[in-house]
Length: 179
Image (cartoon, rainbow, N blue to C red; front, side):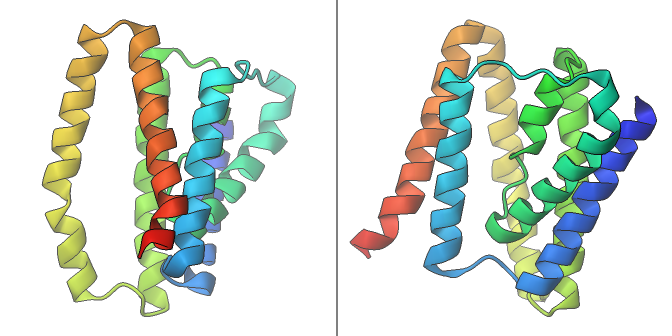
């Protein structure tokens, strides 16, 4: 299982790095709309879809493919959730294993995205500073999310989480119309 997870992470790194190097930084209305579609689709699937399951015999070829597709979605939208998180959920890793696998996947995606964007000149010193300044709010959000996850029932937390993603995705889709 470790080798299959490593192959998927390698796919995420390659897909993100190559996609970012080829496409540049996500910008413009198309990037926001793509992000909105991804967020709404993932949230609707999370709320109404059935939990997926991946057969162990399929992990060898499916893991790297999901990694590559996640990398390409990351390069286009800047979001590393789809299809990696549904795939990781389908592996039945358990709560702590899932959180750890997501953390590793998101870290690799972030690093690969930064490297890919640096290679094509889309990530300069100003963007590095802006990214670093966003670490404190991101960490605060993670902390608050962990606290809420411990206080709210799993069903209510899940509904709030996916409902927030739908609102954010719709804002990404409709927001440019108001500008």
